[in-house]
Image (tube, rainbow, N blue to C red; front, side, top):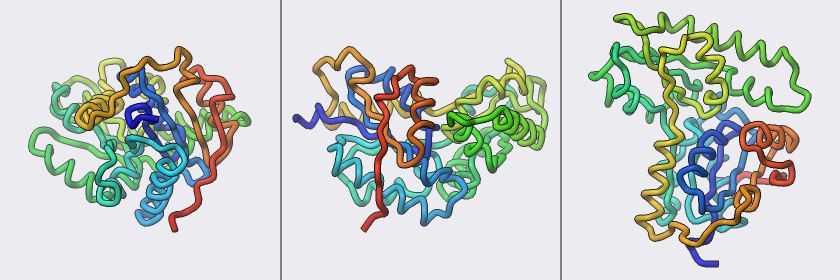
Length: 287
């Protein structure tokens, strides 16, 4: 297999990174992807930095050894903040793309100059986020809210035995956290833009719009990540030139360390993929 023909690895603590995968597939329709959801250890946003770094290295090593990936997209804000610098040091020749809350694009979009940011506790508390926020704080007012439990509830909502109670829990958490942030809208002083600082949150955009109104802009990171991945592949001469198989299932492998039925349900719901595209994976901690 030529280097350009090898797959691109993508991983997240759970199903949230599927939102990034959607953008990658749209921007890179000829590429093959291997997506790994570390559901058995989710959510990362409520784990320690050390734990997240250990899982990130273990997954990178697994994807390199077992799937011969040519590039890696860390489709998790918490893992990016905790471990992307270490990954780059360990794998200097591997094109690496992380995700971060889209604060800079939000500054360009906001008309009121007041921007809300929702993210996991791990992302909000990270040094990387502090540096990112510091780089744009002079350009706008930011209200940042850590949303404990939200990513986990979204994750649980995809499980086959999920109940209406989980859906109600998501709605309650969204209402609680957005209310704590202050007023949303387009009037002076209100937040007219909300940054979705966790890849899971893309999957509750409809509920957020119902809460905040259609005038509030929601900003995610998927498209920016896809553009950066394309740039890195082209710079390294690794962009696939031959046509991909016609079927999306043929150019995508989905793996999970946790509940296989949950990933299958998410793949069907958001990617229109059959259950046969999903497989169990064992990823032990790094040696």
